[in-house]
Image (cartoon, rainbow, N blue to C red):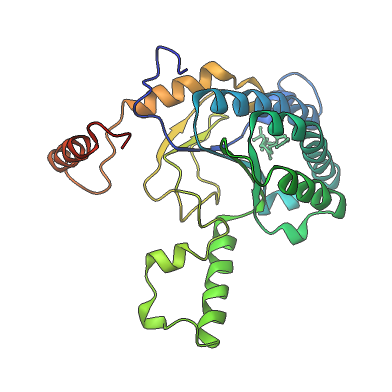
Length: 260
Ligand code: FPP
C-alpha cells in the first residue's frame, strides 16, 4: 500500500534512477571511494523493496555507464564484484517476490564472471510476474541509439525494412528492451542535474527529479518524496493545460467501471 503522501491513482509505471554520489559520500567520511559503492548497495536493496511494495512495474538503475570503464581499474573491479555479489545474493529474494531481473547495455564488454552472474540471474527470474528490475550495465544512451541504427541498417540491407517507412515506433522497436515503456520519472541523486547519457531516447517526456541526497543515504522516504513530487506535476506531452484536462476527462470517462 502506498503511504499517505502518495496517491495510489497516479503512480509512475516506470522509475529510472541515476545513482550518484557514492564517491563524495565516502570522501566526506575520509573513506576510499569504493566504500561509497559498498554503502550504495544497501540503497539499491531498499529502493528495490520500496518500488515493489508500491507496486511499480519497472525500475531501471544506472549501475555502470559506458564512460565508467575509464575509472581506475580498482574501482571498476570493485563495481563488478559488488554487482556479482548483489546478483548472487538477491536471486532468492527476487524469486520470492516474483521480480524479473533484466539488463541493458553492451554486455559483451563485461568480465566473464560478471557476465555469468548476470546470465544466471536473468535466466532464473525470467518468468517472474511482479515487476522488472533492470540494470543498465556498460550502458550509454548514444551507444544504444547507434546499436539500434546499426540493426536497422542491416535490416534495410537485407531487404527486411524500407528506409522510407522508418518511423519512431520502428526505431524504438530496435532499442535494447523494446517492450519496456518509457520512464515516467527519472531521479538523479547526488545533487547534480545532468542526464549523463542515460536512456536518451526513452526520457523524451520523463519528469526529472533531482535529489541533493548522496546515493548511499537515499532511502525509502526519499523515494516516496520523489514520487509525491511527480504526482504533483502536470504531464503535458507537448499539449496545452486545457487539452491535458480534456484528455484526462475523456480517459477517466472511458475508464469508469474498469481499471483503465
Ligand atoms: C555513481 O557514484 C555511482 C556509480 C558509478 C555506480 C553505482 C553503483 C552502486 C550503487 C553500487 C553497486 C551496484 C549494484 C547494482 C549492486 P560516483 O562514484 O560517480 O559518485 P561521485 O559523483 O560522488 O564521485
